[in-house]
Length: 160
Image 1 (cartoon, rainbow, N blue to C red):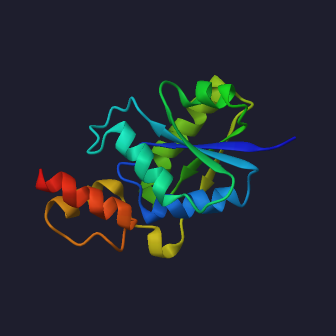
Image 2 (image 1 turned 45 degrees about the vertical axis):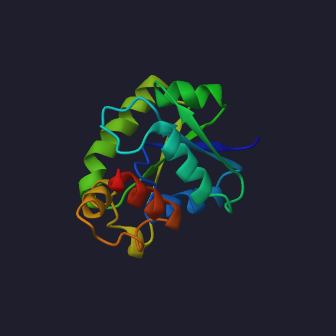
């Protein structure tokens, strides 16, 4: 039976840390669906469509993935896509408590869908979309944290 996984997130913006996890997951699963959350409690800097486009561009050379927008519960989205696993990233210890709570809640909602935690490489472990947005808005060079397509879109959005 093919194994599919969902890697959900806001990806606001996609970073090299996200891409690192997508590549790792694509080596483990037959298919990885990178699911861009459209209805998030966070106030995104980029629109859902912009985040989708940036993710597609940034991951165009990674095999066996697809990038889509989703709305609602990730467990429901996983069921609709016959995915039996959720991918979550753990950068630092500080991520663990929240991610564990989310994983246990999802397990209660559907015990047949597992959550797998992946860690990015050491060079990407500290990268945070929130910090990248702050640094970019203050004029920092963010090119070592995000793909070039993200750098360009940031420049254009900050000009307007």
